[in-house]
Amino acid sequence: MIAIPEPAPVPAAPLPWYRHLYFWVLIAIVAGVLVGHFAPATGTALKPLGDLFIKLVKMIITPVIFLTIVTGIAGMRDLARVGRVAAKAFAYFLTFSTLALIVGLIVANVVRPGAGLNIDPATLDASKVADYAAKAHQTSLTGFVFDIVPDTALSALTTGNILQTLFVAILFGIALALIGERGERVTALLEDVSIAVFRMVGILMKAAPIGAFGAMAFTIGAYGIGALANLAALVATFYATSLIFVLVVLGLVARVCGFSIFRLIAYLKAELLLVLGTSSSESALPSLIEKLEAAGCAKPVVGLVVPTGYSFNLDGTNIYMTLAALFIAQACNVDLTLGQELLLLGVAMLSSKGAAGVTGAGFITLAATLSIVPSVPVAGMALILGVDRFMSECRSLTNFVGNAVATIVVSRWENALDRDALNAALGTR
Image 1 (cartoon, rainbow, N blue to C red):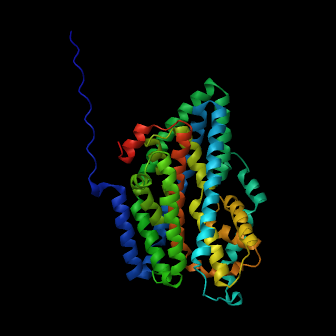
Image 2 (tube, rainbow, N blue to C red):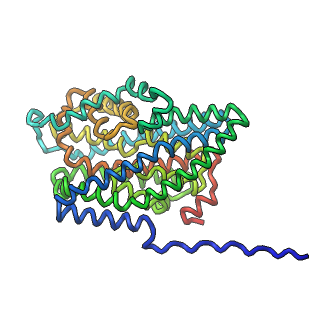
Image 3 (cartoon, one colour):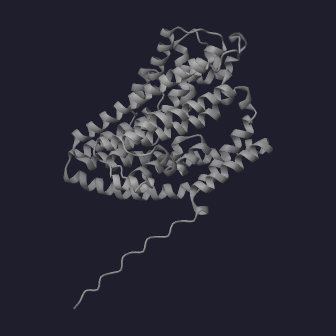
């Protein structure tokens, strides 16, 4: 009897452009801008839509991080490799986070966006930033260390604290790797659970255009496009600096590692639009994990680098920290010495790590940084409060791209990158 070979499966037809998520998110962003501009009261009232979508995403982020890290570490089995990946990731984070701070410092000194404003610190309303200054103690090194350890192992999965989730997931993943066959059975079960969780993510992402519409309508309605005009130099300088950092600095890193930063940005366009619309890089974290695995990055490496990068690799936030601090000093006619600027940079390095997982981290870490340098008034933060929301979007976009590049680079360093899959995903095959 002659065996008749089964016909090869017919590949699914690509979705038409109008069914892609990025198209509808883009439409939602434009609609949100129009509603916020022409009907500010209505735009402001739509804030719950954006808040609800962010809450939906945060609801799923903890299980996504936990399952990704646990299955990644347990799947490696070689704990020495786990330590090696972590060491390489943190070396990358420290290098480029510091570089981002230095870039912000240099640009602020060259462009001097705050020069000429001649603000008298005594006229500033410090009450506007009192809440942020009060939270700044959370960014201390002691507070940072104690914040990592949760009250209980289960509370780490219920409070939404990314650092605590990382801590418990790493310990649990190591424990599974150490108990042999029984650990393999639990790992297999968790991998099945993760499939269901990521399917749940896919369901939630269908609401992304609604969330982006509400968030953008609120931003424009509450602050108005006209608010940008008052501090146009600072906003423009920050966006230009972040763009240069992504295209030049990260672009060079990408080229050395054999891929194009432009192709990567195009590949992640749906996620980037979602980050833009919601001003939160967390909203696209689950999708980023899926996209990077599909692009050939080994699951264990993605599971370690992406979640830790969200806490420790904040390029956009670091650029903002030094740029905003020097803007306030310049606006208040405070001349900083080189030593004081270096002190600002050093404190910013620590406070940006200490605020990992704290809501509104960018503004809070700025308050913590300024409080260490008394000559720069913390009340000066009131100057940029009105446009911080607009800069938050750029911070999130830069952080997001930085973590995508970091994951691919660390995967390559570990020989855990499928070049064919990467080329196929980025369209360079």
